[in-house]
Image (cartoon, rainbow, N blue to C red; front, side, top):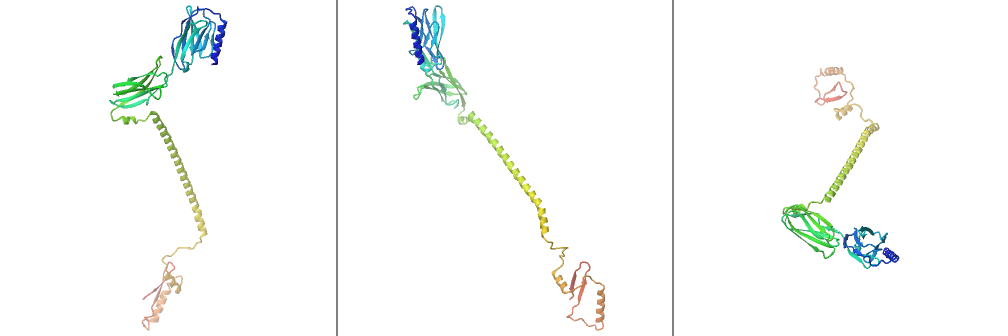
Length: 368
């Protein structure tokens, strides 16, 4: 706003310092209607006759640029000028940079001290986007289906049409305005597909050669296989599953390594404990042998019975056998019994003592 006031004041100063030139100055050709996109540029030309002193450009009633034969008075960087000579005439051009939606309106070119002026209209358009439910569709062969395309954020709304790149037996489309959003339109394509291909939704701006499009891949399958084809995972899901499986595989490997390390450490601990026990056992046995007294010495005669020991205790016998005395005793007994020829008493039982050579063991035998 401050820039506009500065432009007006500069124009007034120039107008006050210049003498009136009469009605000889006039606008030969004024600016023409122009359509520009938001963020783009808009160009307007004004052709005047020789002898002019000041050209003023106004946008929606506000002077935004002033041009003199020597220089241009610029109130904003968005508005610049250029000049050309065409024979005896002079062409002044105003350029609007970074066009905004609020710039739409009337543009006027006028001369100082002249009723001549030229005007045009600036139209500003906004390019939005095209939306579809999916960039790939799976449909049944020879069965009618509908494909939709929405134009959102366009000013004004574009014309929507379809480019069919699939074999079809029938196709038609129509566009409607959405009641909830006046700046969006919906186009519905009805077709009966017979093969795979592409469908392209095309948006064309009115007044400008602006064209935007969106392509949909159409897959046609025989009847009964639509559900199987529709269950295919998208690319991002496949990539995500691959990453998850890789991480899971790495985790399993790490767990296996940890378990193996634990088992090896436990086995080594058991072996070390067994070796220590083995080392301790000889010393323990040696200690026991030193602590326990020797109870038995020599060889044990398992053929010796308790009865024999008792008999040996009642009858004292010489430790070594005397084989020379046995015949003498027998002869003396025969001499004593010979003359009498007495029968031995039934009560008296002869006893025979046997002396065995070898082990020192005496055994009493009673003859009945």
